[in-house]
Length: 225
Image 1: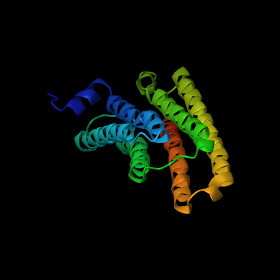
Image 2 (image 1 turned 60 degrees about the vertical axis):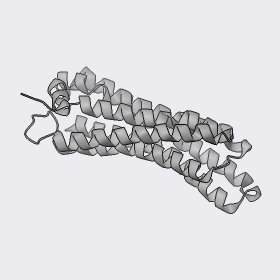
Image 3 (image 1 turned 120 degrees about the vertical axis):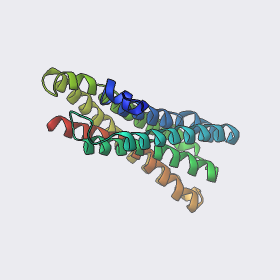
Image 4 (image 1 turned 180 degrees about the horizontal axis):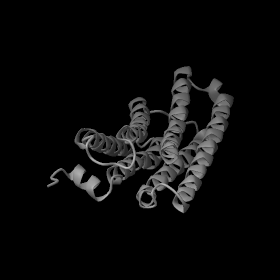
């Protein structure tokens, strides 16, 4: 008899815990939208509330990650190598970790975002979050892939989802480059230490999309096995 909730999920679907985990990571990253709006408005009480929600969601994702790692015995039958699933889990978890990093740094320093780059920063974040959403969509197809024996039309569907994921990540890269150029044009009017941390935040927001793409890349490797 299976008693562990995690094992019960695996009994119903070998991929259900992975799907639940990336949804939690996505929720953590999505909280950056109201967080950024609060930061831009210098509303630090609201920003603190948003940061707390991000930290809670990231902590819940960590708990899920530990449960999956500890409660998935190697003896359970899986259609793909257990080590591959755990690698995929690690990549998913980095999304929530990076969202927590972004919120923690911006709140801790009460960062000021120059008005001239605010819209571009919003667009960078929006595109990065779309990339994560695409990774969630791709991972949601794992059960159908299993039912199809990892072959046939279902593989084509997932491949198209991953192709779109790559396109969104590339679009995020383009937004990141544009935003860096915009910051460069105004950085002489800002304190050097503030400029340094603004570049760091731009990179970290781009990282959200990079990490989502890594999820897609790992999924693509599973298809190739």
